[in-house]
Amino acid sequence: MPMPTMPGAAAQLVMPMPIMIWLAVLVEAATGNWVDMLILLLIQFVNAFIAWCAPAGALPPPPAARCGLAVKRGCRHPKLG
Image 1 (cartoon, helix red, strand yellow):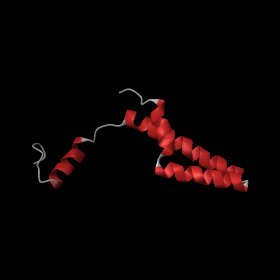
Image 2 (spheres, helix red, strand yellow):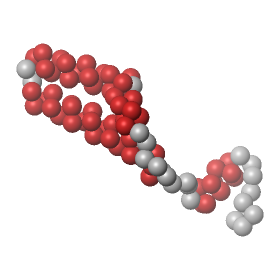
Image 3 (spheres, one colour):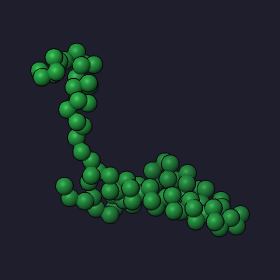
Image 4 (cartoon, helix red, strand yellow):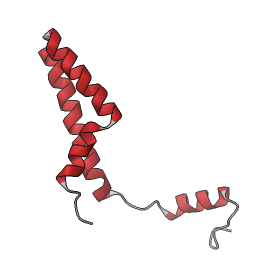
């Protein structure tokens, strides 16, 4: 499976939760809390990197999980009864 493009990772930086973190970064910079600002920036970029890499490594659920979902819908797995 091909890796997502970098604009996909950049898109992770402008969603609602990252926008709140950006605001916190600005507040920390304005108050001079440089260590906290750097920690927030680290959180921001690590989160974007993980979100960028995650779809490439996603695997389908195991058969037992699919069967569990199917039973809840009222279906039965032929091998598990």
